[in-house]
Image (cartoon, rainbow, N blue to C red; front, side):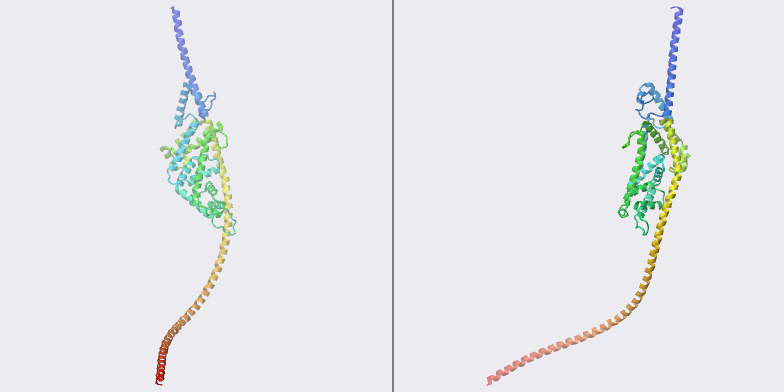
Amino acid sequence: MSLFGKVLVLFNIFGAVGVVFLASQSLSKRQELSFAVLQHEVLLDGLPLDEKEMDKDNKTLKERLISGSDRSQYDKLLTELFKTAGGQRVETRVEEVKRLQGVVNDKVQKAGEAEKDTDQARRAQSHELARILLHFAVNNVERDRVRSTLSYMARDTKLFELRKRSTDAFNQAIAPRIKGLAQQGVHDAYLLAVRTLPGEPSDYFDNIVIGLLPDDPQKAKDVNFNDVFSKALEEQLNGLKAWNDSHFNLALGVTPAGGSAPAAEEQKHGVARLMFGLSPYLAEEDLTEADKKLIGKWKVGQIGFAEELPKTDTFRQHVVRVYAVNGLADTLDVITERTFVLRSLADNLKNEMNAEKMQFVVDHAYLLSRLRAVVALILEETARIEDAEGQFKAAKARVTERKDDVEEVDTKLKKTRERSAELSEALGRTSQRLLDARLKVADTIRKTEEAEARLRSLEKLARDVESKGR
């Protein structure tokens, strides 16, 4: 081979090496760009809803991961994503919802298992669910429902306080009605009584109770209120469970009874809302020692605790996980939505205060009318008492007079009895003498009859003698 040929072969080799090098660089760059695009999509849009969701290329997650390169890229992305977000790695939003559902159900179950008494177990589970649902309330009714549950279901002493308050209200509701006062059914009377008794409001629980009571006072008197109270605790717990399940069902795409399955976007929004709403509760459960020092003396449920919790690394970690699973778009949407709800709740608080003032005025007016009726009844009874006292004094005076008469009669009776005793004794002696005389007379008569009998016998004998002598 000539020198030129050798040089040409050498150039061909260098060219082939260059082509291979450029091709490898191009593939590497392409993979980097592809990973960056995938990373951007996940950060912006979040994880797929489930394995059946289609991407922009009309491929499911499973189809997209068939090739080794896609699988390795997705694995790399998830590894980096959850290294930052923390916690168990998941590949879809539904998988994350199922994981959270297991965590929540386990905590609620364990809260009840720690108590032996049925009512106490219901109390503990209701309190745990109220902690979970606190950040899902979207109106004042739901907020008050959660707040009253958190207050009265916090511990056994608070449950006892609620039981006593409810029992006292029931006893007032079935008490005899005051004459001259507009009559109320048991339901209205119970609600009025429970509002006027000391203690925090418990409207939601009170409405459950009146739903279990007859409105007729006579029928209500036959009710065992302890059974009603236990049944109300059970219904409260079931209601909280249904409320909690509704959020998970939406996130899982469960078709509601009598309804239609949620659309994919609605379901995604439900997942983001669920995760963001659970973040404070999960952070409370997972606080590190450093976070506890940051929060300091504040306890769960106190305002200071709620103010310090967002500053903790644990809470921030849970929020980062919300971003990682749901993406920036959906997460920011639910944060904005929750912000609007909180502002609305704050604005509605003024209306609630005005409504409570109006309710106070109505209750106050009724209580005043009730007080007036009681005063009138007291005055009427006072007049009756005064009249009865006058009659009692007159009767007492008559009793005193009759007492003197009785003493006089007793004295006469005593003398009469003494005289009767003397006469009885004299009569006894006379009767004895008369008896003795009668006995003597009877003996004399007997002797006379015997003498007459002997005389007649002698006369007969004499006649017999005389007749023989003739």
